[in-house]
Image (cartoon, rainbow, N blue to C red; front, top):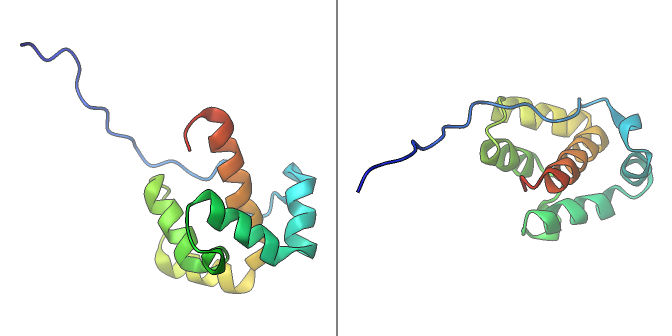
Amino acid sequence: MALTSQPVAFGPKNFHTELTSCCDDMGICCCGLFLLPCLGCSIASDMNECCLCGLGWPMRSVYRTKYNIPGSMFNDFCVSIFCKPCVACQLKRDINIRKRNGEF
């Protein structure tokens, strides 16, 4: 039996939107500003994790690792501490885009 194709290695990709691109989706932006715990639960649900884990830096690190997005745990920690609503919005936007593209 002949091998007809080689496995494809996926190179590093970035998030589909920037950390500060909140205006790209105003619904997510408003949820991040006024209902941040609900947005965290939505993210955790999307990733099949506990609702309490949705806003922590480990969730961002797991997501980055799963989709081969460059970065570091230290960076994930820092942006999650200082820009939690922006991080949650970016993660939710990226999840939604990957769902639309059939990548999630």
